[in-house]
Length: 495
Image 1 (cartoon, rainbow, N blue to C red):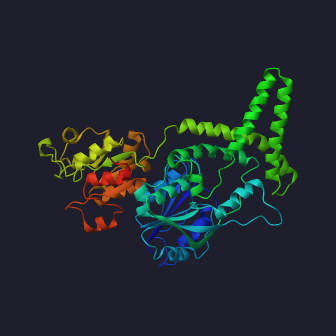
Image 2: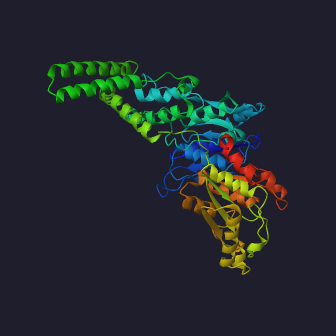
Image 3: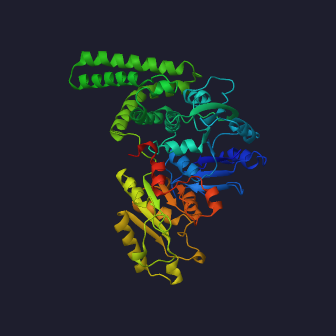
C-alpha cells in the first residue's frame, strides 16, 4: 500500500508524538513519504525538531493557514493516497498497519477514508463549554485530523480552497466537492487520540470568526450544505434577534424613551440569561465557568453578527474557482522544440498544444510565466541577449507572459534557482503575487516536476521523446501536451 502523510504544524510540542508511529512503522506498512509543513510565518520560532528519517522532509507554507499548508503538502507527494494528520493527535503504535487495512481493496469510487477520533473526557467532572467543542470531534464527519484521500480525487477537485484561512470548514468544503465529483467517502477502522482542549476562558468569542467562513460555504455550496454534513442550522438566527433587541434598547435609551428602553433591555437580559443557562447547565458549574458563560453569552450574539457581516463583505460574489492561480511553463521541450543552447530566434518552433495552453490559461484568468534553465550562459555558449531574443520570439508566437524567470548557472555552480531546486518557482510566484502552492509547473523532464515538488507547487509532466522512463514513472501527474495539462489543472472550470 503506497501512501504519503502530510502533517501541517505550527510548532506544537505534540508534533514528535504524532510522527513517532510513522517513522517507526514496519517496512511493509510504512508511508512512502512524510511531509511536515511548517505553517508558521517565515522567521518566527525556532526550527522544527523532527526525526532524522530518509522519508521525512519539511516544507514551508508561509503561515497562511492549515488549508494552504495541506495544499502545499499534497502537491509535493507522489503516492496515490494522501493522508492528512493534525500535529496534536496521538496515533497508536499500530496506526500504519491499521491504515493499510483501511485503504486496501477500496474500489476506485471511494475517494476518501476517514479515521476515527477519540477525545478522552475529563475525569471526575462534566466538560466545560470549550471542552465540549473538542469532544464533538469524535462524531464530526470528514475532518482532516485523520483523513485519507485518493490523490486522483484531490487532483479532480483541485484540493483545498485556501480562502479558508482558519482550521474551520476547510475540510468540510473539500469533502463536499469530492462527493460532488462522484466519489464516496467512507469510515475506516483506524483510531487516533485527540487531546481534550479547553482553549482558554474566552475561546467562544474567537470561535465566532467562523461565521465568516460559513458565508463562504453558503456561496460555494448553497444554503443546504449543513444538512449534507449532518449539522443543525446553527444559532445565528437567535443571535440576530438578540442583537437586534440590544440595538433597539440602546437606540430607545439614546432617544430618551425610557419605558421602551427598559422593556427592551429586560427582553435582551432574558434572552441572554437563557443562552447562558443553556451553556452552563451541562458543564461543571464552577464559579469560574458560570462567570465565563455570563460574560461571553452577552458578547457572543453581537460578535457572531459582526463576523457574519464581515463574511458577507469579504466573500461577496465568491464562487468556485481553480485552486491554481498561476501556470509556470518550462520553455525548451515544453513550449518550444528543444534546440540545445539555441540563441537564434529563427530556430524557434512551438510544441504541439503550447499556444492553446497559454491561450486557455489566460482566458481563465490565470497568470502565466516561464521558468527555464539556461546553463549555456554559464558555459559561454549563449549570451543573455541571445536568450532574451529567443524569449521575445516565443512571445510573438505564443502570446505575452507575465514573467520570465531564467537561471543562467551551470550544474556545478550550487545555486538555489536551477531546477530541480525550487528557486525559480518561488521567484515566479513572488513576481506574480501568488504563493508557490497556488502555482503549477508544466515541464517535459523530471527536474521540472522536482522543482515544483520542492516548492510545494503542483507539477505535471508532459513527456517527449527525450523524457526518461524513470521520470515518467516518478511523475505524480502527466498529460499528453501542455494544453491537456492546463485542462487538467482547470478541471470542470475550463471553457
